[in-house]
Amino acid sequence: MARKKKNTVISTVFTIIVIAAVAWMKFKETKGGQEREGSVRDENVEMSLPSEESGVASSLLTPVRLSSDRFELLDDCQLIDRRGNDGDSFHINTPKGKEEVRLYYVDAPESAARTYGNGDTNHKRISEQGAAMGGLDQHETTQVGVVAKKFVIKLLKGKRFRIATTREKVYGSHRIYAYVIVQWEGQERYLHELLVAQGLGRIHTKPMTLPDNTPAARHKSHLYELEKYAKSKNYGAWGVR
Image (cartoon, rainbow, N blue to C red):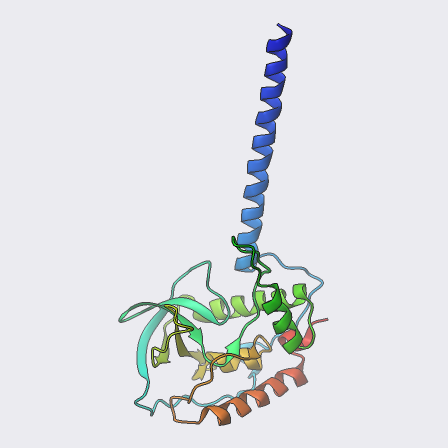
């Protein structure tokens, strides 16, 4: 009888441990998903963002002119809701099928610190991003990434936009580099410029001649002017306090 009672106790304890472990894993999964989607945020990390109505750098933003025959222009594109979408890379539907695009010129910070299955992490990348955007720590950097992701989703979700691409692959992957062209204050603007002007991305990664044939070096200089503007207004990463 005593042995049976002991076995019952052990079985009960084991069941409780299993239930607790499952609940903990579910909590971590939910929280991780929320962090990726931008719904978890430390209120101590504050940053200033201009509204569309404020006329953010309107006179500085490049008019979209599609005069180069080097690019393929895809109209009527739509954002696909995917967990992997981020401030500078996301899935879209185009008239020719589904694509995952990566913006030229700009690198939005990671939206969460992660450890991958093979033991690698994105911590070094986050550190580099934070250093380039005013010396932010890991948490501050990922929170800028969260805001960048939310900004892009709000700008694209449920709307139609255009991309211009040469279909160049990103490091040999399935992703393609592209200019994403959105409506801002009733005019077409480049998404990568808006991210820089909002202080939500560092000037980094693949440069490219603009679709109006502006050389890459000249456009990169222009982006640094937009970054200077964001710094002067304390926008995004430049206003974290």
